[in-house]
Length: 359
Image (cartoon, rainbow, N blue to C red; front, side, top):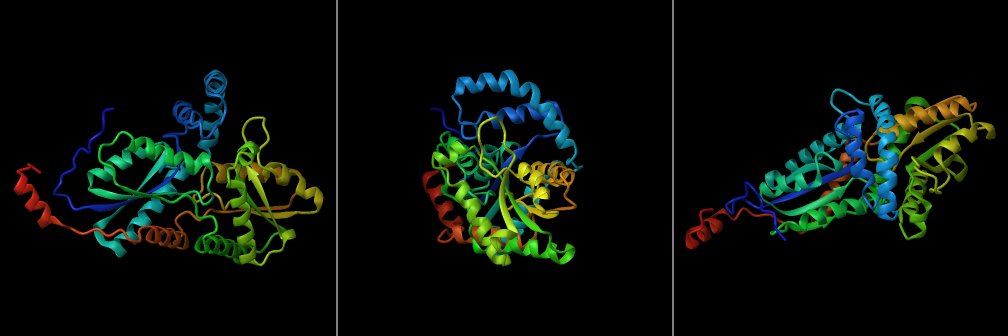
């Protein structure tokens, strides 16, 4: 095996701690041409689609990649801005805000950056960049509150695959979830309260999470349980009883059964049950993206109103709100505990001189 080096690295560099926050990813443009390679990378991940590889290769390349890129491009066009996709904009802002907090707390010893599991900036490129800056201790924080093998597990795979190619590995820590962390629960609850203060309350609060196939749950994935726990804790923080909120699952794909109840079908049925006003929040999304802005904010709004609903409101994700950044910083700080970085420039200089290394 050929191992990768660290271009630009010098033994005279001061050791640093690196923090990488990651999210799912985004195409580089809202076009069919940009969507095809992005979707191919995403849907080729065996963590995402657990189907025999040969069968799935035929379906993906023979059918899906000839149909879905065009449809997805039209959806992305509705949410794209001059700065790019909303997920990229918000993730970048989160990383910058977290970096500013770390700079105030730790000085220049902690480097913060962001990466995407699919698309750019790729995990391996960001790791390379950090190691070249002298990072010898690395913390990775996937911005998924609830653990699923298809998201957090896949992110770990990407880091591990990169490490397999490296000769010199950093000390490594990985945060797998924070679905019941008090600061996270309070931040979500406070964002809902703020919306209530500005707009009043609706008949029912819907907490919608991205779905996964039911088969994944039956095979041991804890995602469903963690989503339900998040909902329960948020409801308790808001003082809601069981009749005042629901947990649903969105964004299903394909024909097999996914986690239920489905968000779209729920919204189509609620007006017939006498629920005329609803507010929807997505506690599984750390940043607003296509699935929250277009799918929840527009598509599912239409379902509810066309079924006889009268009032529909989407409560935005936490994005880079101060309370969210505070929670992420506390999470990072807690997981950096025990990692100290000292600038041993004098010792490094002595060793370089003693061994004659041109470092």
